[in-house]
Length: 168
Image (cartoon, rainbow, N blue to C red; front, side):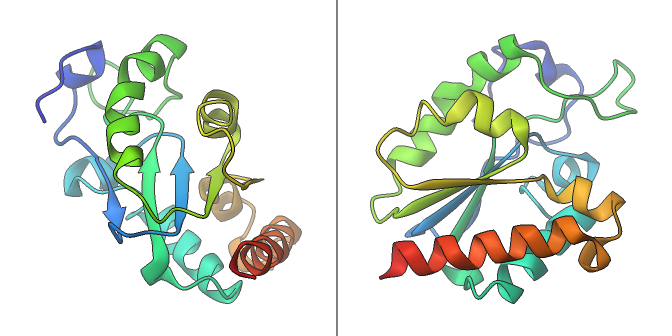
């Protein structure tokens, strides 16, 4: 993929497409790649991604049934490639076709986890008819103290309940 639909391609190192099982039954939709993801070309591989993997595991959700993607596939940052920022609505709409191409290939999908407010806002209507849940973004959990945070425990309990519901 060599997308140039928006300005994000000018500062990216890599397109951040997908990580995980191609026969995923649970899709985790995040907000946008950070610097680690941009460098490695995979979503949720930085500190927040490690925390998310731990959170899923502690909630009883096997990582080998998960797929990971973001609302955009290129890192939104300032013009020098420095500070991360939220993707704009225009950037999200330019990338939605790329995201949907990957989503359509996930034929065994049973549920979606929206990680963060942006993924829920823009994708909850796109993925109609599939059970979903929203949790706070793992970068927020990381900044709040990780597993010591009450937000972490809330997210873990919500994920455990959601997983139990879609697997029964």
